[in-house]
Length: 197
Image (cartoon, rainbow, N blue to C red; front, side):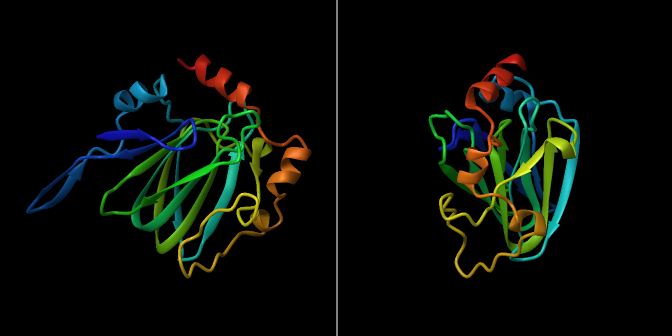
């Protein structure tokens, strides 16, 4: 299993080793001990989510208030997705930046994103994504920023015609969310992560 940091501080790409044989392929999709070597603590999995998307579905930018927010470990079990991690943490050294990882059933990569980071999924080919979450869903703490905000500037896949939910379509822009004090503070995110170690 190879784990490499992404351009956004607090996010990692996980590429598992694949073991093919005449029956198919085996791989370890999640190893709490290997991940802990990079993130500084063991990820507690308190909820799993299964999201089935049609081609063109665009989900995000989603995040939750810190503390406790919700760290996520995301992988595709079918289809093809682009996973975007957006640094929405005010005061972060990578504030306003994003990075992306293609998730599919060829390389079977996963993405880990720490508490307080923004998350977007773009479905390129119909499929299913599984999330391991460090906290249970709490509607009162859930937030969203428009994934189509030009200031965020996500580079969507070629010929991608985004389909967004009403909630995401009506979400504030990045600048509006910041002006309204809705974005998490980097120092709060780091302090919370340290408390888990």
